[in-house]
Picture 1 (cartoon, helix red, strand yellow):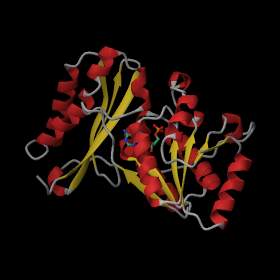
Picture 2 (tube, protein in one colour):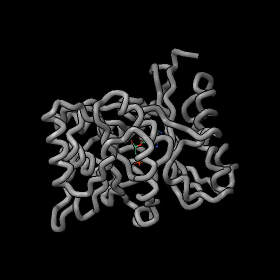
Picture 3 (cartoon, rainbow, N blue to C red):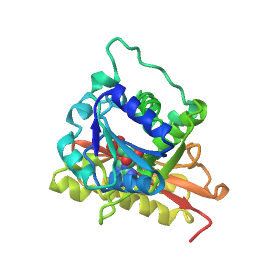
Length: 285
Ligand code: AMP
């Protein structure tokens, strides 16, 4: 596996790959790699000649400075791990390489898509995501880019970005990879102590409780149940639970009028904020 840190080098490398007709799969990450990331890489390796993984803790998408400072950074371990899986190139630039000084930050607007959930609770977050994803897409020029459903709203934003800026690539949304107890894998899970780790699967449990009630109860009743359930779990503070349209991510008021919903949750567990979601097809089951 090649490790590239410079923007100029990744450009040259990608240019050569494209000239020789190779298809490029791309998995952008912030590192502290886990099985969720590895499965994205595996999916890319199956569908492309070359797989490029990026590791970059992107400062512009953190609305909370502590979250940025304390975000786990394990580049040596990640590099060793990537050598054992199907990754051909690791692109791991420094912040200065990606954001030269004095460069003004672009402003994106995604309308209603960013007014809800993560967009509402993390001001500026999706502007930072759109900035870094655009930069990386220009540098890596992938034929396919792999993102996780765990960050459902991010996928919707990136889909909109690809469409609006005419990026010539296919976006692949990969299902959420979970621990055995249901907790969605996340780099932030490493910051949980034992007690917090035991409380964390309650987010997924809350989603499953909501799913079981979708056909019997109204939206406000289900929201109340979820809040009551998590209210009884020590150390977990619910930030939001939403029943949303999976495409537009706007709140669904009347479940009988839609075929599929996304159940989305965010909660603070000890020192970290976790998110999760599940998609439910209302015509099944
Ligand atoms: P991150 O390093 O957290 O920015 O994640 C990099 C990519 O991996 C994003 O597209 C995430 O949605 C995806 N990802 C993170 N956790 C999981 C997971 N548990 N299952 C599937 N994909 C994931």
